[in-house]
Length: 216
Length: 259
Image 1 (tube, rainbow over the protein chains, first blue to last red):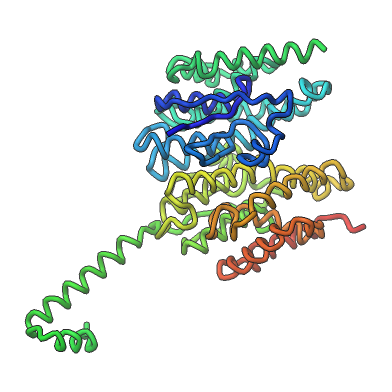
Image 2: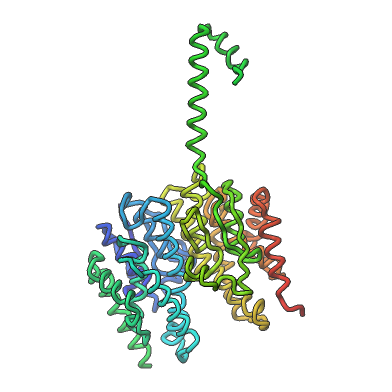
């Protein structure tokens, strides 16, 4: 039963899926998407994802996109009972809130600040940077007195957020000045299964991409 | 408690002795009581919801509560007067957003997390948020598309106009139309955004359409969206669509500068 993942290594949302699959000991059939040559805009890709984004998961013919929907799906389907995405409604709700904080606030503000610079040659916007810092302060507050973002256990919320926050290393954002965030980052790097392969490798690719884009 | 005459007459027809009839009757009563209490997992006290009527995510949460029969204690929180930035509010929710929910001491924010929680914790069935992993993934994808793309692009266009008196931005409108086009494609061959039945994904997305309608934004080119919107309005009618969603949208529309 093939589980295909259409991805690019540098993309943070793709790395969140890689981290989750690794934590579940799930083998993914990795399919590199040539964004540079518009592979994602071709009819075959639009059929599985009309929004033509990465990552897209195709599980035995069934397509799913949006990384945070993919990672919760993987646990629901292949990791029943796993602490990665607990079944208890209250515990699950906390993970869900962190995931929506990620897509709607933290990662969004990073993208708003950084992507226009690297992909659009725009100058750095001080107000947008301030918004990223505010989001990091919130993350720091969420982590007060707890090991992981949603409590005592590693969850998909940590995996999604670490994939995004690690990408900040390619920018001028100093997220390690927030004590809880720094501590949490080191913890996840050392406890998330296969972190080197699943995230660090792709992060290096992202940094290399950023360097080449900014050199232009 | 009076004995159900119809039930007894049915048993008579089955030639059962009176003693056995009474025994069977009480067993029937007990089974029904057990079934009723299993479905009755409602919270002990009404759930507090910190809200403001025009806020779109608050409207989604309120309609979901109505659909599930959950009692809410509504706490008006006027963000335009900084009521979300008091020390007490920030202690409860450091992100100081609305809606925020307090379920007998369990605090939660992010409307889509609240709606999911309502169904997971209190839904009598899972139709609003199916447990089947594939069906659930589809709802989750729509919810993420909503927050990360559709609602975001709606805000990018309208927040400057509603709250900063800025002009209509064609580039932002084009991005919103692109998102509506994607929604249109997602609705192809489906009655609701995530399948044949209403889910929390519809309740999350409909509030944006209600706003667009109240603001006079022309989304008529997206035919599936138009049909889905009317269908969803009707489906949400018994859950306060007119009062909660349409009413809230009209309050927001009043903030738009008159041309």
